[in-house]
Length: 220
Ligand code: DC
Image (cartoon, rainbow, N blue to C red; front, side, top):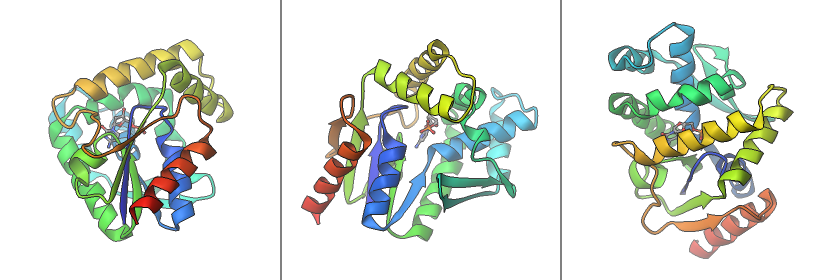
């Protein structure tokens, strides 16, 4: 069973995908983590993010492992746990370079499909999962929410994690990322054909999970 969840930053994809996978007793694939990891690796190695050939090399050389952990996915890059580091504001701000570079996307889409094959049945979330990466998925969802609500969620998440983030810069970063995700030439954020659209603005994470679970059950 393949279930895709796409949508903008802060729409509730990660929490919902994780919860839904747990309820269905299948795996969870966080594809944003692949773009974040390449960005982190490039930053650590002092690579110019606008240099496409250099960024491609970072993507080709990356050794990425994702395993389920108590607090979400544990992301290991080149044998180091980078689960926290890939969520920094710096990576969030710069991730658009990897996401907007077609050759990097090609490498990461291959990697995501390979991870999917290894998982068998899974819930995957990102921007292009139902449109490009797994167009034959069994059930597709598109989550959305108001910009302010999404910024509030991200800000709370970062404050809980102990990052000293200020609300206005989190909100600005989300708006910039929306623009970049929706307007890029390759695999822009789009509502997949046949997707169930859910506006999560006024919903709790539990309500979102229950709604999606009900849709999945209807389809099986
Ligand atoms: O879901 P996230 O915030 O971790 O994603 C980080 C960035 O990665 C996002 O701004 C765009 C990019 N991304 C993408 O282009 N395609 C995906 N399938 C997942 C993420």
